[in-house]
Image (spheres, rainbow, N blue to C red):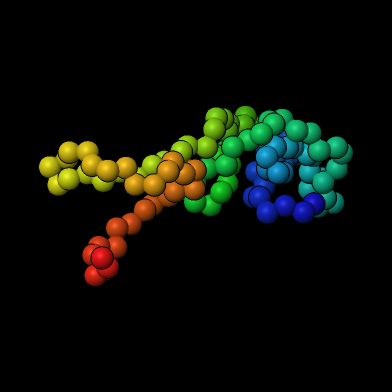
Length: 109
C-alpha cells in the first residue's frame, strides 16, 4: 500500500485511511502483518483541512468513525482599526490561507 496518509486502526481488525479524496477501509491481518481483501470506499470526496492538508477523521474504541464533512473553508483578510472599525478587504478569498502574520512597516512606498 502506498499512502502519505496516517492509518487509523479500527477494532475488529480493520484500518481506515484517506486515498486521494476518499476514505477507505481494509482488513488487517495482525498475525501476518499484512492487509487482506478488497479496499472499500466508505466516504467519497472527503475534504482536507488545516495547514497539514489532512482530512479530519477519528475512530472510537468501539470502531465508530467520525469525519468532518463539507467544503474547505474559504478565508479572506480584512484590516481593522485599533478601535474595531472594519477597513479594507485585502486580496481575494483563498482556501489555503492559514495563520497570517503582519510583518509591520518595511519602509516601502
